[in-house]
Image 1: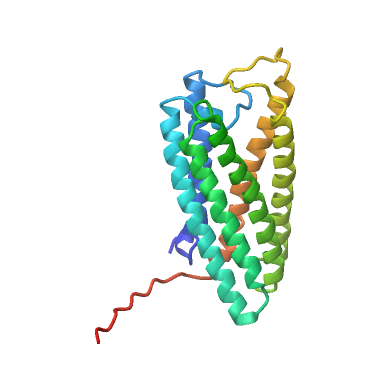
Image 2: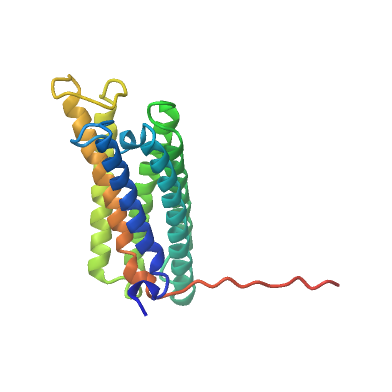
Length: 238
């Protein structure tokens, strides 16, 4: 048996690989076509022009689907553990799932509505994605501590907390500095008045994105511990 065949490990593993590829492939194609600057463009900028916009939109939608599945599997694992040992509050688990699914919706909006075409819709999706995604990570870090000694090791709990805090700080900086950026354009010069705040905002956006990726990477040990099964029941005709 391969390592990814253990339990539900394939879900977070595929999510991490696919989402990382999403960011990297779009960036490489955009750089090759000279559609964005080499030094830290916004992630959305790498998917603003065709054909990379098609790649970005497709891969982002698949990422949202995989993330939803991973979040739901995590929810069911925590729910079952709570029923057995009563260590996790069900409301906390429900809230985390709700925030996670809203974050996935925001991800779909970001991938579907390009930044240069419908800016306000794209920005709304980005706020949903990053904002609720951060709170999802925070709640899951708290849940990880409540689950002990079951589930994750203490070092994994600390790691999740670190990624949640890093993503929170990066989102705050990205939003504040991004609000000072004037206009939406794919190429910027160091001589531009808002170049420094643009660069700071873009760097923080990449930090948040890969903090999320690494956060889901920490799910792999937990997902070895359970499996989900679908049970079909036939209705009996009276």
